[in-house]
Amino acid sequence: MVEASNFIEQMINEDLAEGKVTAIQTRFPPEPNGYLHVGHAKSMFVNFGTAEKYKGKCNLFFDDTNPSKEKTEYVDAIRADIRWMGYQWEKEVYASDFFPVIYEFAIRLIKEGKAFVCDLSADEIRESRGTLTEPGTESPYRTRSVEENLRLFTEMKEGKYADGEKCLRAKIDMSSPNMNLRDPVIYRILHATHHRTGDAWCIYPMYDYAHPICDYLQGVTHSLCTLEFEDHRPLYDWVGYSLGFVPKPRQIEFARLNLTNLVMSKRYLKKLVEDGAVHGWDDPRMPTLAGLRNRGIPVPAIKDFCERVGIAKANSECEISYFEACVREYLNAHAPRAMAVLDPLKLTITNYEGSEEVDFDVNQTDENAGKRKILFSKNLYVEKSDFALNPPPKYFRLKLGGYVRLKNAYIVRCDEAVQDENGNVVEVKCTYVPSSRSGNDTSGIKAKGVIHWVNAETASPVVVKQYDYLLKDAEYAGQDFSERMNYDSEHLLYGKAEPALLDAPDGEAFQLMRTGYYKKCTEDGMLCLSEIVSLKDNFNK
Image (cartoon, rainbow, N blue to C red; front, side, top):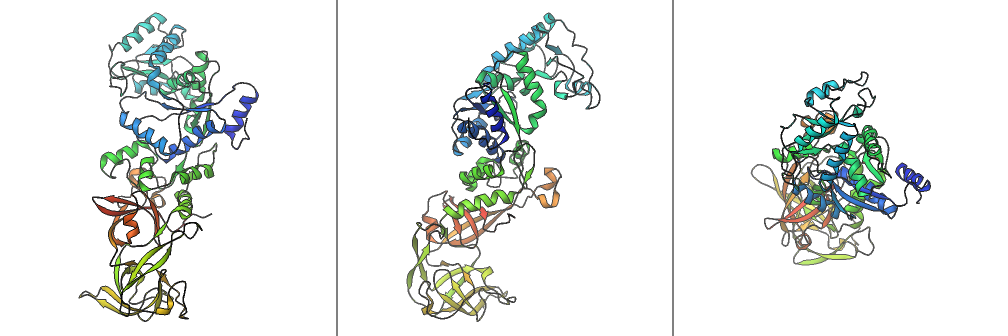
């Protein structure tokens, strides 16, 4: 027994107190039909986290009952994602492990008059189901004898019928107010090669039928599902009671994680990959865990976000800015600082000769992070946006005749702007104030602006990748994904970066001063900085 912090734990505590269970067993149940996305991180947090809190066990359960959409590639990707998230499963289990037992349970339901073979097509079954206010119509094949149903079901298994020609349906109640209990299909014919069992089977159980059986056979005590399965719970219970499961697993539903500006559907994510709208499942713009990993999103920030959002009973949509705030908060505390110029403008200090090292704080929020040395010389690069030939009022960056401090170095005065034949400023010439060195400034000059820079003599060329959201929610809220897609969501810039970034290991995250958080990587032998999250916090706390 633990102190409950959400309704799931309250229900588990009740079951423990009443003696219904003595140990907790959960499972994380992805279907291997695509890569996991950030919404699955919430399910991991619930399933693995609940088991861990109760010192129980959590299995990795692959719901592989639809071979037409499932691949070993997805199985491998799911394993990698779970390990990256820092979770460990007790056992790796597949629905296909239980195909023979699930089939025998179906035989048992037929013998007990609880299932029948139906010849209606999928469309005919759908039409005969009725509506929320009108009862369904019983299939004309519902009264088949046990012997005929056993023969037909055996022939289905032997491959004598085409896809959709027949199916096995549970015999429950066509007048039930719950549509899921109106004689649901529990087996369908599907001539497709399975990623594990090959062509051994041509009939496959439906999820709603296989789910409670696989939970029971694994020893699951609490089947924690997202809210869309709430209406399916009566069928889950019907299967368990009909087959005499003791103790029967208890299904509990919780709200799934929905985030604005993100495609949270594996079907649409797969389409983006197949259409070439993104570079792959691990594209940094994708909400897949592989994409978040490639982008440089830290796992602790994802878990912190899941904990802050909490476990609720009602679906809601969370602002992407809340997730970004959690990422930004973690990186602010842990990421070293660095300087890079994304749109370089040459700055020449006309009265400076030689070079010297200046101190640079690795991370101002961490007193143990220390300092490192950066080389300063007369030839620098600054951001073009940090100079204005015709500045607006209250402009505190570089302007003719104005003073500005170069981060961790000196105050300089802008004396001249060199323009090309088109009037574009290609160089600014400045003089520095020798007595204004950071940490020992005796100049008496109060420069209101501070800008970052890199040393032109030691800086490395860098490709900088910046990203917009895949979905334009603000403009197209409520519309189909295809109408909300942002096809201009990746931007490449070519800048200059200080040597510390070139020397850093691939994958390390940095805060680029005044710019944002970026992950260092190497692509085609070139230094690359890939945006993790912007520096600006848009979350309204």
